[in-house]
Image 1 (tube, rainbow, N blue to C red):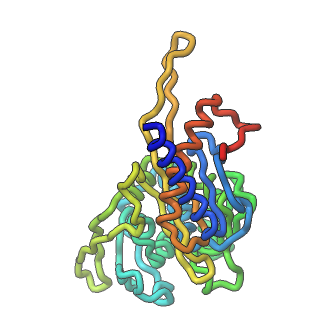
Image 2 (image 1 turned 90 degrees about the vertical axis):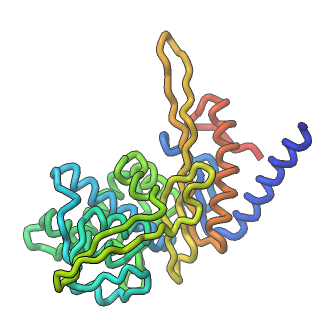
Image 3 (image 1 turned 30 degrees about the vertical axis):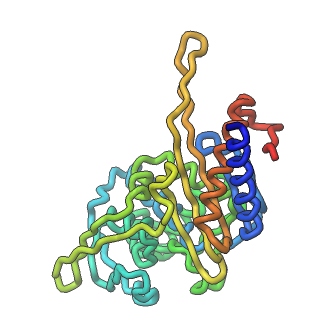
Length: 309
């Protein structure tokens, strides 16, 4: 029995080592505290593709919460949508209308670039800039302000969608910075709900007034396995295969000083520049729970703890 248990642990370690060799950077972190349990090249600046849309969504959700804006309000697909084409399948056209809520689903679940651009232009206009910059630029400035607020010191967003071949300046971030962003996003119940959906039907009204519906399918192939309930995929020629996953377990409960202390258990795994992002992320998550158990047994120290090998 003990041998079988040892064999399982060894198998996880072998898979994790193989995953490391095929990945430009990764981080395994505790979502509640942000503590990094294991990492490789965590501070390396890299293009991150559509992982950018996590920041896009959080700017929208934070704005909606602060202004009490209704996410059911309609946004018009801008003329700039024509530059993206319809490769992702939703097929938004300039002049179409869609609710902010459904645009969030399209951006997060199916990684639709037009949806992200439409959100940026609509919310950027609502945020206002005194006419000093276009709405989308104003929105991206808020994305970078959020990054600074979260301590994402090695991140620069240049658009709301993450495409890195349309701009003179290539956007970048790091696995460590994206772990901070993921912890922030997964603490938001609306965000968690959006990224946890495998499928979602959205409503679109064409410029002609004709209504239609589109069934979104989440690009995160790991969703629903091993407790994984998010987060986002990203792929460009420069970024390679990227994915962030998040998984929770039942919280721990213990009595202390006459009180019941509840400790959430959630891990986030950031994978950048992988040859096989889903297998890599899955193996790192399994490794992560082993590391988490060792860290928790040591009292969850925020300094001085080293991952067992």
